[in-house]
Image 1 (cartoon, rainbow, N blue to C red):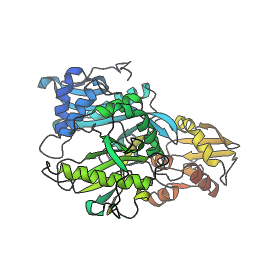
Image 2: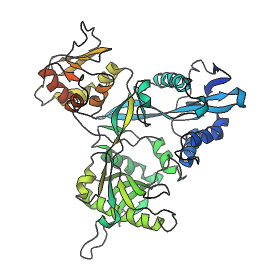
Image 3: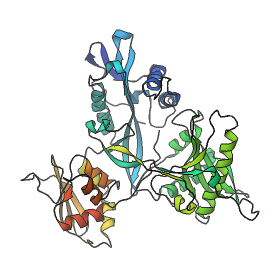
Image 4: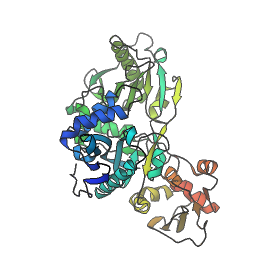
Length: 449
């Protein structure tokens, strides 16, 4: 990953002995201890978050290094870390169009230092760093509401799962034998994993693009108690032909935890139903073996593929519980630029639609700003600001960050209209065009942690 090419006026004195600066290699244990304590839901430090911090600052991470962390220290308390966040840069895809993403994470402040604007100042710096890297979008996984105050909206599916109780795992019938076997993936499997991962992501509007460095990192994260931990498996025939893959990890040693299958795909020529059912049986057996050494047994399998995925259809009516998705916080600082970046996706959606070969302006009014999407014969020629002469002028109105939910397939226009009375198209033509350009399409992003 690129080093910090501008110090962004850091270190910066914030008053009362507080100093904001970039992280350093010598900060690893102090920041890990801080994050483990601040992000714990109990009185005990969260070892998963602490180890994740060590992974991010270890120098082994493909995009994040100590200098991608911001820390606020208190010089009056011997340099104690009192606030921190970091940036995890990565590449995602929107309908096949790559775009750069900055992921601010591990955002936290010591309770004794809150209400001083420390996080707001850190976000100003981290947003500038993200922009300097050409990152068009920032995303955060976080607590409800908080990040809205920094320009984010909850606008993209996050997680979502279907639970499969052990007793409902499909059994082999009529004394049939397994057609596949499961083995841990290795670095030599990266070409096959890359192909299969693309298949896994094919039903998702937004997904992450993994490069070789990221595959090597994720395949090598052996510390189980870390948010960076992955376990990839190859599903193959008994002659060694690769039929599919899966990524799965056990939940923490806590009550009612499942073994979570987070990625799954079958190679063309192998039925996904057969591969999925085999995976369920294989991971049930792995979970039952793990239970011999766990204080709290794993009680089920969780297929963590978001709201929808071909594997759900392949498995049939066996799931006992549906876990609805949460949402990523999303920030798009240059919306016009992003829309132009993905214009080929929008133009493709017009082809064969009732608005094929459309020419005209689609004027979007966000109440505090406005954009006009100008089409010529089905091509998006430009996205430019327009000045509204009245408060509600435009073809459609979107308060706050509601348009991002439409853009990222998270909600339909009708759903937004139901939730927000001041979000609506001003005419029928705009309603039809918006539904064609921005259809509802769920996503399940395997983020780079």
